[in-house]
Image (cartoon, rainbow, N blue to C red; front, side, top):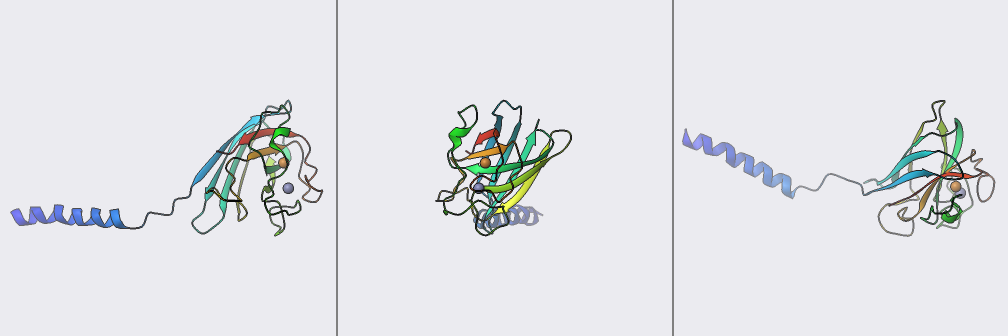
Length: 174
Ligand code: CU
Ligand code: ZN
């Protein structure tokens, strides 16, 4: 009786020890941005950036209070949303010295996330994976940059902005 009662805790201890020494589950480093209205808009939202164990970054964006339709979305080079028109965020984040393009193109700005669709209720979600951004420190790190939501659709062609119009929401990535 006594030995069998001892056996169970011993087994549990062994299990706990195995867990403690096993490699950690792949857990990405996550950065976040809160989108705030700019250029007289009322657009709000948030974004998360997560380093994937298999490489690249998963980007998830949620937007609210936006005009229905297609809107350009980019990471811009400066984490500064202080200007009323968000011009303080500078140009598209482009550590590779590439032309502006869509997220599916090999040659593109690291910050080119393409477009997000906003539904009739003013809300939209975007989820994508990009291999040109990281959360962890490095030349392509998204931390300390700004996420910008635009007035218009990104045509993914016009240089260097995609002709996406005004900057109607901005959030510093932290
Ligand atoms: Cu932009
Ligand atoms: Zn661009």
